[in-house]
Image (cartoon, rainbow over all chains, first blue to last red; front, top):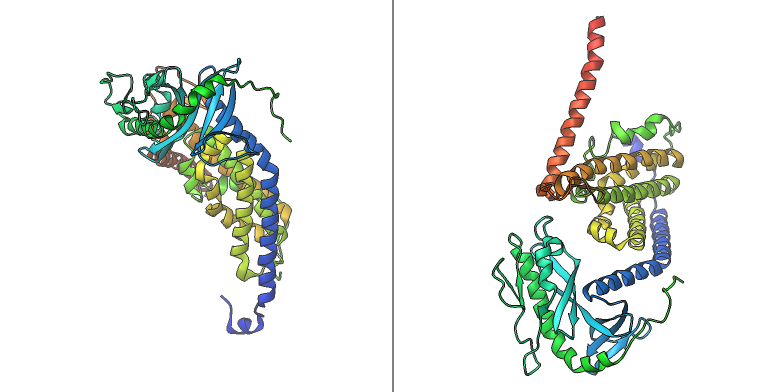
Length: 239
Length: 215
């Protein structure tokens, strides 16, 4: 490209300007990223709050207000963004009279393509799962994503039985996914033909989570159902 | 800089990316988002607009700083600038709509490695003044968005029977599922490339024929 003479004439760039440029760009980059982060943070948090709330109200029929709890070794503790606590997070849904309608919790299991993340609603009156909402999935469109759209599959969760065993340490009957058309018991999930792996993942996720959550939740349910919670504050405004 | 910059802005500065040097249909750049997120028209549009913003913002900044970036560290500098604007887009999309953010998945972050953007930074923005770089980046961005939409529209209509989420054919339509799967991306891209090549060749033929007749 260049002749030997040109190479001699051309001065080499000293290290100083190179370091200065990279440092300057890095500082500018840091400033812009932090600025955007700070500006968008309240909006992103509000979006996440709304998404969770919409999902909770969807899986707990009749719920219009939500309160968050964690279950840990000390019992069940109400949590707020200002007052966080460690443990298993559950969302309690209340109707307009302040009556507890159900408890929503997250569940996850390996699907066909990736992890399937769910939220499900537990109804303490019928001791059953009243609804599920897929939070995240990467299943094959048209096949695995039928777990969201297939009405027959969704109907499994109108009242999926989750009674506790007599000793209260586990479910009386494991939640299992059975082959399409062979469902006989109310704790069984009728799989979608052609999307068996995704259907089984839903059953596995619910069983794992319910086996863990419900025995821990049971001792507190009576107290929770006696307490009333009415959302008093108006729609939360962005500050 | 020793080299004199040609600073005149013509229609070609803008239209280059739209048609003649379309990043997808002619240069075949940025194939990763082209194939991955064009399974619906709305995803294609959002990815196109996000890429256009990164292209515009990084092009402007690189063009402004072109005299002060030493040659040896230029690629590192460009990548940091591009990554910065991609992060800004990432946060902005999360603030606008979580559903859209989840639908686009990792491909927003992967705009950083879209070779079209680095290619434009190296070949154009670093050699032209800001206004010209912006005009060219806008053309390229619109050309990229147009190409993504071409794929997204066809794939959504055939693979889901809808357009921008609106049902087109009613419940009796049986979707052609392969179209929203990765294989459909390749098929539709191939079909579009075929069409564009055919149009190009036809244009060349019609341009040659009158010339031959006059001889």
